[in-house]
Length: 184
Ligand SMILES: [Zn+2]
Image (cartoon, rainbow, N blue to C red; front, side, top):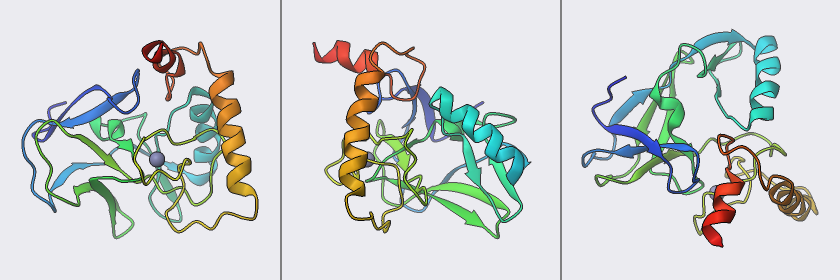
């Protein structure tokens, strides 16, 4: 699928994972792509989410009280825009009906495009490896208040997650194996 603003290739943040890279300078406030996918009920969303989670994928988007968007079906290249805790785009939900990814600052050709996935609560399966100095270490909304000890607990789980996932298939979200190999 052709997008005038970006191409999809291997992410620099998350080796082994696809990412979206600007193919031209893009001014702040540009709608770069609509988040498309099949509309699914909340009930189905729960089921699919856990499948995705097992595969290390994050392709369900909350649309409104009734429906979520499953980017893995009838979706487009928007699903390759990765999460960052210090993003250059944001996802805007128009009237609980359409979600667009828009730039929040001027972007230079070649930059990886990201937005903040902002989960309401930390999901054990998704430590954040965005590498930004502002990284919250977990994919969770900015104003999330960690309960006492929770952040430490999550960091410990992240450590275990990374250890456990050495040697995982390189198609998974975090591609630990590749990261390890690059470090050696
Ligand atoms: Zn992060």
